[in-house]
Length: 150
Image (tube, rainbow, N blue to C red; front, top):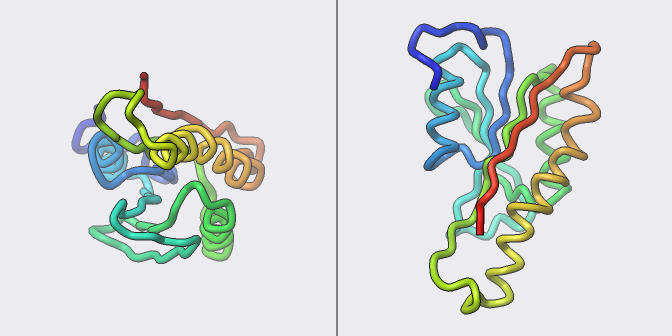
């Protein structure tokens, strides 16, 4: 946990996928309070985003509302970052789906949502964001991910 007043991430930019609740929200808040420019990609599970991207700033944190499983949406966010001269130093793949109940009772659509969000989404995001952003200027970026354990 980063402490209030810890400024070692000042001047760094972090992108957190799944940063509006749970662990992701705590990570988001810690980086924000540690001085990092903090960006979040999130989706409202009640809303069908269908490849759309919207953005706003909330309490100094840039939020992108998009589905990480849709490559074109991630590419649109990458282009927004480029158009605003923002490069990434840290990429955190935290987005996930929490479906409770016996695994053998999962519907096929639920299973596909879990796999697409926790496996396909992070790999797609690495392909989209890493080549341009994390490796600029020969600097070393930080990649990390959280995944559910079955």
